Amino acid sequence: MNIDLDDWGLGRVPPLEISTATRLARVVRVDRGECDVVTEHGRVRVLSDSQRAQDEVAPVTGDWVEVDDADGLGDVISRILGRWTQVTRRDPAERDLEQVLAANVDLVGVVHGLDRPLPPGRLERLLVIAANSGAETVVILTKGDLAGEEPTEAIVRSVAADLPVVVTSAVDGSGLDQLRAMIGAGRVLALVGASGVGKSALVNAVVGREVVETGEVRSRDAKGRHTTTARELVLLPEGDGLLLDTPGIRAIGLWEAEDALELVFGDLVELTESCRFRDCTHGAEPGCAVVAAVQADEADAYRVERFRALGEELSVQRRREEERTRRHEKTGGRRGRRRR
Ligand SMILES: Nc1nc2c(ncn2[C@@H]2O[C@H](COP(=O)(O)OP(=O)(O)OP(=O)(O)O)[C@@H](O)[C@H]2O)c(=O)[nH]1
Ligand SMILES: [Mg+2]
Ligand SMILES: [Zn+2]
Image 1: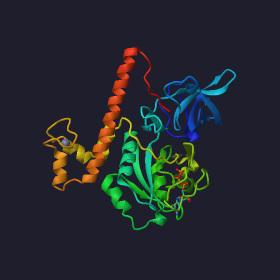
Image 2: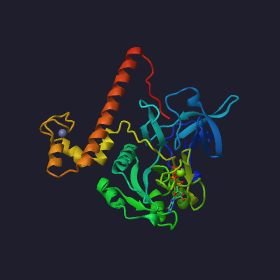
Image 3: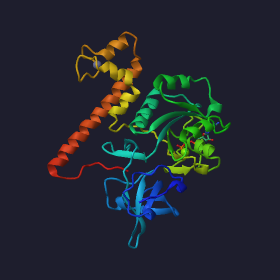
């Protein structure tokens, strides 16, 4: 079937295996069990059928879905179409679960505010999550008008030398056109970062009017107050792409991101190939190329420590996952893993 969805301005459509065009929709907002979706007839609130059925996969913002009329219940999401990218982290409430923050985004913007110091470890974690999504990554430094003496851009360059970095300001408008050009028609830019860094203000600035709520920042520590509570997809004017605003995240636990680790710590991963032992933990064992590099002042000890910690976190998670899979295979039960 030939469906022309360009008029929706809703972005790239997944390969369609869907019966009728009227039932295709994109999830633009998720609120505990209820979703706002946009169909070709406009925005409607629907129930998530998969959540009713306690299915493994629950719809997230950015999903393309099939909407069905369940008898007596009105519209429900009956099926989630295959995702081509997903931004995920370990569920902050339940360590054995994966949490999907957004689906089918083309670009992940790792957002940090120039009004505060940038802990490199936080940036690295966000970059691993972005790289792991399958989408492109851009680092967005907001509040350019408030930039102080902090060497933030230098930190970003040292952590992410090859990534595009855009400095923006919702106040003086700088960097907005650059960002608009990176999004482009039909593409989705998802913003992730701590509360108060100015994700929602950036959305409003790029769109050109107040479409999402922004909040105050505590003056004491520059922390935000978690103003945004739902993940929301917002259309740019004239079909110039979409922005996905998310609530500020505190916990950035990694989930199955070994390959992405390589994208952020490529130089160190390369070094590990020269370690004497294949399962070297780059700690006390002899013949460790990473430790040797630190001793020769060729690698930063703090960065190596963070690299080791992330690697360890991922292998612990991997072992727990394998153990769980084994247990479930034995009992024939469902895997204790759910996506939302
Ligand atoms: N000076 C200046 N202030 C900004 C800029 N962008 C955001 N702010 C201010 O920073 C505060 C927080 O902005 P928000 O956009 O609500 O931050 P957020 O990242 O969406 O926060 P959460 O929704 O809690 O995750 C607000 O008081 C904004 O006015 C900017 O470019 N320049
Ligand atoms: Mg916000
Ligand atoms: Zn080693």
